[in-house]
Image (cartoon, rainbow, N blue to C red; front, side, top):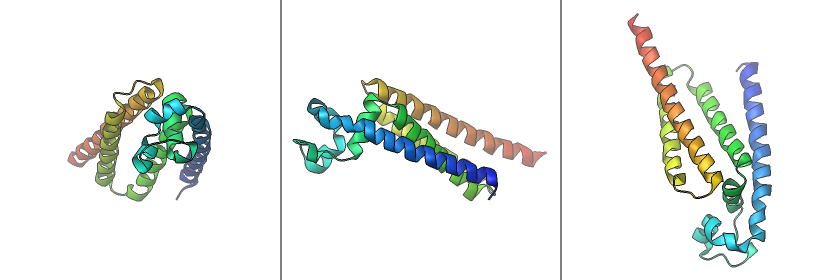
Length: 157
């Protein structure tokens, strides 16, 4: 593995860790706003039934709250984790262009599926994440198709 790849992996990992910590901290505001528990503590409601006290809120709901109302760090989490996944896929599949293209298509469809869940959100933060997921999904599928067809045209000549 080259030095450039190691630097990219390290930078993306550090960015993911820092943005995760910052998003969790920003999302911690949910415990001070009980009127938001009904709409934002989605995972806590699935696990515990109703959310009646601070102790009922799961840590993952901190990220949901941060994504809805302070999307900067959740967006950095999304981008850095996506970059890490694509980079690891590239490292593992770089010898096979076709398989890496299929990998990118799968990631693209995953992001398009995820954007479907975020499409009807009334908050600005989740609209930003919807647009980002939609763009990543379209770009990923587009890049995969370009790589696949470029490889096909290269075989013809």
